[in-house]
Image (cartoon, rainbow, N blue to C red):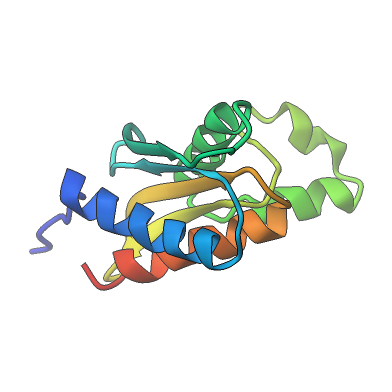
Length: 135
């Protein structure tokens, strides 16, 4: 039987710290949102000078990734390819920077990053994903 892994607050802080480290290495100011295995906000961090609007966007990116079990980049690519119907999909934020958090192949939460270019947001989020895989 599978024992379901749940993220603790300490886990979420580790994930966010790794993401923050990537952002700091590149001198980027962002907001980092970490969701638990129910899709609820577990931890939110807005770095100094990060845009205020990034608070909501980071959470929405994480939520999209959690709900659909895929990176938000996949939605961004569909829209860029002309699939405008994706813009009205409930709960979908088609902007790169949201990634599911996996542990032993199962989703244990999601991370969303906002504040710089969306590809840079994804780069930062990926640092958090790497930590979640080792928890």
